Amino acid sequence: MTGKEWLDYLSRTLRSRLCGGSRAARCAVLVDGDNVPPRLTGALVHYASSFGRVTSIEVFANFASTHAAGWSAQMKEHGVIGFQHYRTSNGKNAADTALIVRAMDLIHTERPDHYVVVSSDSDFSALAHRIRRSGATVHGIGHASAAASLRVSCSTFLTFDELSSLILSTDDAAATDVWKRPPSAAEDRVLHALIRLGAARLWVDISKLGQELREASPTFDPRFYGSRSLGELCDAIDSVEVDREEASPKVRIALSTRNGSLRERKTKS
Image (cartoon, rainbow, N blue to C red; front, side, top):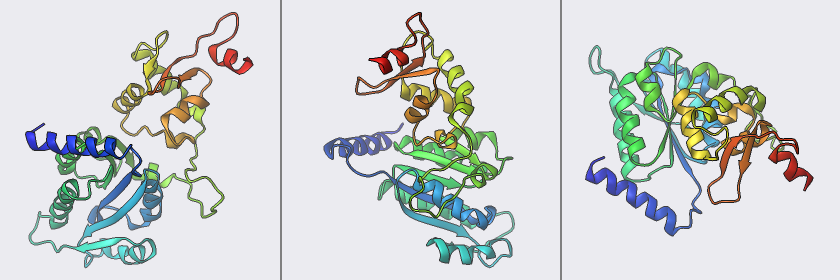
């Protein structure tokens, strides 16, 4: 981390502490419109809003091309901002460069807490690393064939098929995050991660569990299992215990004894 990047990170941390951590999380969405199906815009908006207040959704593309023509209706329906960039020469994509420049502007001005970068281009790997060094979280979305270098550079990564699997609801009374898979479907992944962390007997910070899960599978997201956070997901898995008595929650594999597990003893008491 360079001196300037370190100052950016320190400034962000100090502002958060001085504000008591009360500022609502903000999310910026940057879309490579030349390589993203416009039909996914609704699911994309829903996904981005789960991270906090979406400050902007910006699409960079050559809208004069046949492939990007479908963005017009989506921009009107979802309030997406479009930036026109003509292809100046064969093999050169001006939209990619514009997206990177815009991301760097945001790092030094609005400083979002989350970035959703929608592209399958491995050239964005360096951008993902730069955003993460600034202290923000990068959520990548792209084709299943996206390069491994891009997937691991992002904090999380979803394929277009996984994004499409979100169940969108227009009912205000419905939960904001509605997903297909039950929490029990994530149990094996969570338990294996806890075993690797040595949490069969010892408590570990839940943040370490989240990091271990993402390193094992960049596409892992607790919201795919009906949970708004990793802590909520662990609460829903009977074989995992969560201790919230300290400032940072801790987790471990549930211990079974003659008197029942810790979870059962707490319930009885």
